[in-house]
Amino acid sequence: MIEPKYKRIILKLSGEALAGDKGFGIEENTIVSIAKEIKKIQEMNVQVAVVVGGGNFWRGRSSEGMDRATSDYMGMLGTTINALGLQDALEKIGVVTRVQTAIEMRQVAEPYIRRRAIRHLEKGRVVIFAAGSGNPFFSTDTTAALRAAEIEAEVILLAKKGVDGVYDSDPCKNTNAKKFEKLKYIDILNLGLGIMDSTATSLCMDNKIPLIVFGIDNPENIAKIIYGEKIGTQVREE
Ligand code: UDP
Image 1 (cartoon, rainbow, N blue to C red):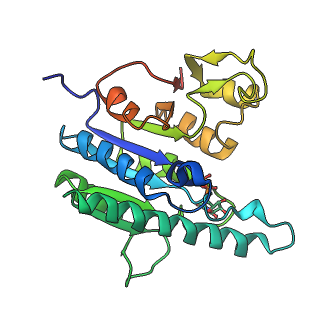
Image 2 (image 1 turned 45 degrees about the vertical axis):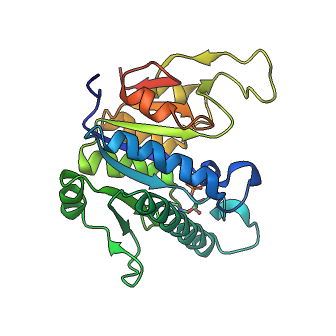
């Protein structure tokens, strides 16, 4: 059996990744197929923590007229809906999970407690981090960087829908767009590549957290990366 390349990872799933072709909300077949892939890597004894986005419901910047902080809190609640959806999909196929929220909602899930999250991971439970960082003006990409640093994850797998890595321009608009195999964080900032916001990029860079940007349109990519296949774009500090 091939040894997994990583022991503890953060999988960042954007809200869009869960919406399938609907583009909004949760598409059940899509979430089930992602859950199956998570199960696969969890069965390889990889400790899996998932940070879920919320863009399939709401993004803070979706509203121009609304108070930004309020709008961001709405976005964070959206991520919690996704977290519960993913929890349900995972538990239905026998994967033990815990959802931890960065905004307390004890009737729904545990509050985020770092040491407890690590304990769950050590016991083989999949931990789903919901409600982002709990702070407005941040993104779930930044949350992924933050949680990766906190739980000492070896890598962040940044799942993207509709694109299979980082390009020098938008591949949907420019047929000549060039895909990067490897990148440094500083290049993302200097070239203004829109793959992650600058806060998330800096946090990863400062904490030397490797990142792999890959396409989730084929969820099997998750296991392939864990087996060490070079998929998507590898981003590192050096
Ligand atoms: N959000 C926030 N603080 C955080 C994480 C998320 O305010 O720490 C809000 C923000 O409004 C964001 C929304 O939640 O637009 C959904 O998250 P994100 O846009 O990162 O989701 P994704 O694009 O990954 O689906």
